[in-house]
Length: 489
Image (tube, rainbow, N blue to C red; front, side):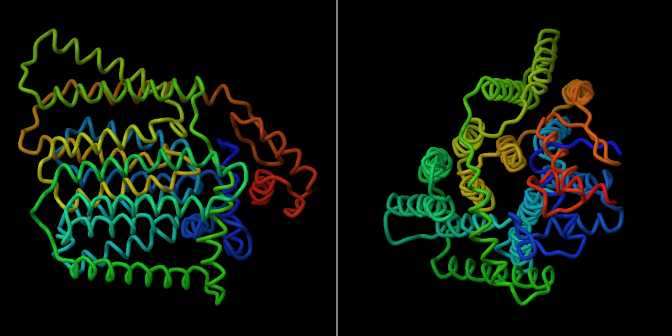
């Protein structure tokens, strides 16, 4: 077997799926950080194909493929080279970095499915679409409990669209306070006391910034159209919450088939987030992180320049073509140097720039767009203790595509076939870069399992597994447990 494993989520999540395949239940029979849907799905693939490289990556490959399909459905008017570029960015920063049964991958796919429903048809005018959206949000919760922040974002967007009997300034101050209160409640209730608490306070302030920018942008860009009364907003929120909660309860009943559902809910909503948040990560200003954010900014600038060229009235000539190919070359080279964007300032720069630019350019913002940006801003609260932004890059890419679509919706797209050189050249460079990186990694072996990794932590895991002699309870590391489970199959 020829695996490529990291020492973080791979042993954790693959082990959970393997234990679930053996008949154990997450959050009841063993500790988990999530409600369990993604573990059950992966365990089903393991049941069919075995615990091997194929079943491990089939799950992620399916999610990545469906994600690409939905994005193409949502943005049919965007240039195909730009769509391809966005999909490559999502795959490299989200799926390739973490090709495990990560609940975040399924969670974000379901959020994209909800946006696709709302985007294709106004959910407020169709009860079925409306209920289906909250049904999918309930399914998303079964994968990752942070869907609650999406529900909160929806409620805020509904009340923002109400014609209150007070001044708009007071209304937006109340909405801003509600968002800050939600983020602060998460900080005080679900981040353990101790040394991590002061560290997370920095992230608390940083994560609230995009929400505050959105409130300010909405206040400056007021749209009197599509206003609703308070009772209508309350009815929508109540109906959505009912569908959401019923989906969660039925989902837990089907997955767990146990009367201990209160214990599961307590683990999922309280204990699991506290355990995860105990590993609070600070924003990094190391040389590597600054290099990553610099490369990302360079890639973004080149992409924006080419997008503007796509929609400009400038005629093609030799000098213009030279400029385009220079931007393609620089952008592709910068992309290969991006690395891991987690814990970098891309965490807040990307959503703030997109939100500000969108509301600056678009005078009348449709309700579905406002909803998406509220969800984007509220979802930032999830990253207060653990800013792994690269695993959530799809939300930011979709926001960028919304910005481009709505900014140039009245302009025809010019045929500029030479811009296809950007994704083609970028993919070629990535393949060479990844091949060299993986080839340089050390090869590890335990019994019949052979794999590569760039993490020296596997040496301890292998030693631990050899000492455990097949006894999971004797393992002191997650890597040890995963190696024993995989080697037995």
